[in-house]
Length: 244
Image (cartoon, rainbow, N blue to C red; front, side, top):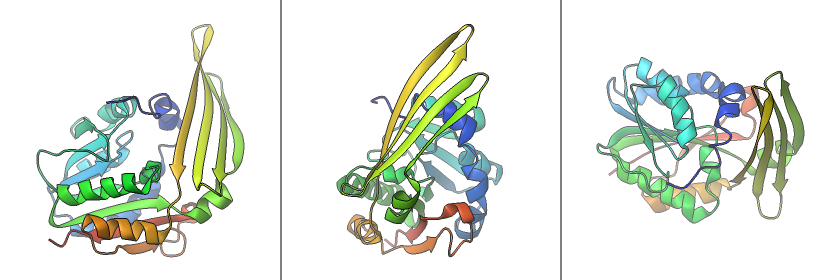
């Protein structure tokens, strides 16, 4: 397993970005759990620090969390120790048992930098689901990147400081996020540099990749217009099932 860009970012992510699960949980309750029998197998693909896995475990589900960052999974072991946690690439993941539901949240799949990578993920998900199984995921839109992915700011605390920068290239549709992180250790400051990239896909590209993988076209929910969550502007949720 190659090192993930999130390994050096995991601690800061846990401190400052780990509340997404709380905000998206009502969406999961309304659009996922009604289709998931108690005790069934749910996979959280790109599970990060395991907060969603913890919520699903508390609801009585058998949960597998998959992420390609060992450091993220260290936090997941603390948050959801009774889940099965696997360090695997989303394009190549393997399960011992098929899943009734697979979710992938917090624009994780925007990290697939080429359409064939996204297609690979969808194909693996299709193979990993039981017939009738549900696939639910979200992605950032082109509009989100164009309007929100251009910022510079800093986090300043007694024990850590981070300089953050986000940039979006209109021509390539590639978004980049850079962080210079300084963590105090005894009398010294340790620096870690993080560079993460995402790609914006059109709805047509996403739907076609789903169809190519064997899924029907997904039902789409707009985070702001359909779900009325103000900070979900430019975030689309996709709901589809494996029909055979």
